Image (cartoon, rainbow, N blue to C red; front, side, top):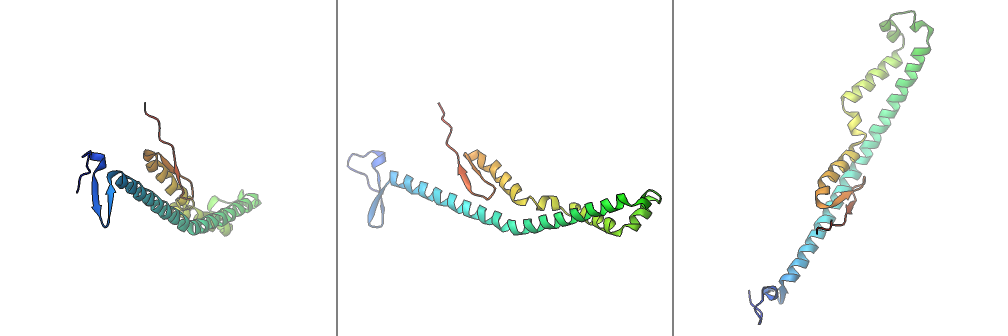
Amino acid sequence: MQRAANGTAHNRLLRKGNHHVTTTDRLDMNSLEQAEDLKAFERRLTEYVSCLQPATGRWRMILIVVSVCTATGAWNWLIDPDTQKVSFFSSLWNHPFFTISCITLIALFFAGIHKRVVAPSIIAARCRTVLAEYNMSCDDTGKLILKPRPNIQ
């Protein structure tokens, strides 16, 4: 390390290759590195959220189909005049479409379909919680939102 003629700390020069770099230049490089890190984090977050979208869409379609089947089966089960005349288990036995779709819907909820259909939103919400400490946020696609720094007086 060499010192400049006036010897002040902010004028210190560092030898790097064939050129000299001042400490203020080091700060600029540090902020460039931070910006690159933020861009890399944003790319990775958007990539992760976008990779979840196809699976989330499939789980949503499965949930919609099974819900419609259950509702249709329930409607047919309720409007059947024999439902009131026989026992509960006999009426379920007489309506296998409703029984199977209802069991399937319950099994899907026990398997966690309610979390899988909103997985990207869960990831984004957790990221928002962590990013709030750094005056940042993100949208549901994973794009970073930089908030202005609060003025401390």
